[in-house]
Length: 272
Image (cartoon, rainbow, N blue to C red; front, side, top):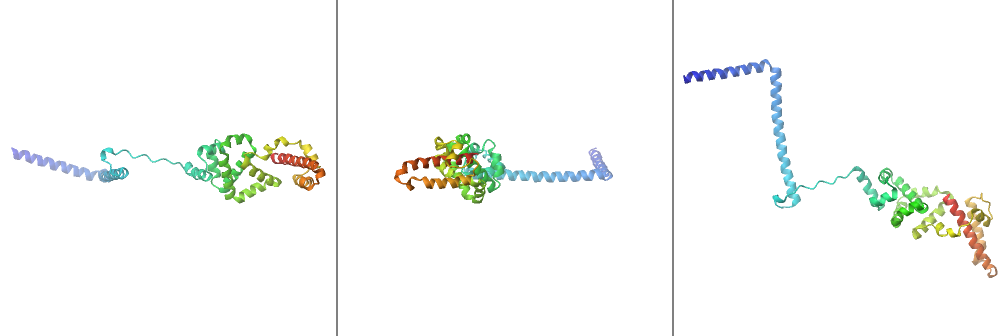
């Protein structure tokens, strides 16, 4: 009886094997690709598992190096690296070169300070030109000056540094002022000391423009070069040290009025 059951089991196994073999080769276009996929999947799974173990090992090693030998119970999650945007990478060296913080840059360049610096900061000449425009604003735009006056010393240092580093750009910028270049440079030297132009300090001495030209004996249509030439002539003529004591008092009055007239015209021409 046991022998008969064993024989039947063997025959059944042989039948199943035969059936599988026949089906495998009959439908080879299905079974072979399926077998290949199974083998590949098993292989890839083994590789992924191996890589996962390596990552675990490396993470543990990094933790040990970071915490320098502290016990495993005290290991904490490593701090996430600080994300630095491309914009920050461009802006930071510019701010460092200008000596400004982000808050100060916002005050100096306005609410869109980041976009402005990203644009002009790519070229030294453009950045220098932008700073030179700041120089003009801080001297002659009183509303702007009020906003930045608390960092005026820092700005004057920044502007002088940019001028020193970019002499050609500064020379072209001042050259575009034409006959007012000399006045502009003089006003900047004055501003660095007093945080005001001498136009403001001497504003109480300002004359009517028509009167100023009359004192210099010039037509109101005279060019500034003509004004400068006439001023030098009259200043030399009426300088108190060059006149006798008999008319020295008169010379002093004339000399003061000549200077007032010149400063009035100078101020009008520069601000115009």
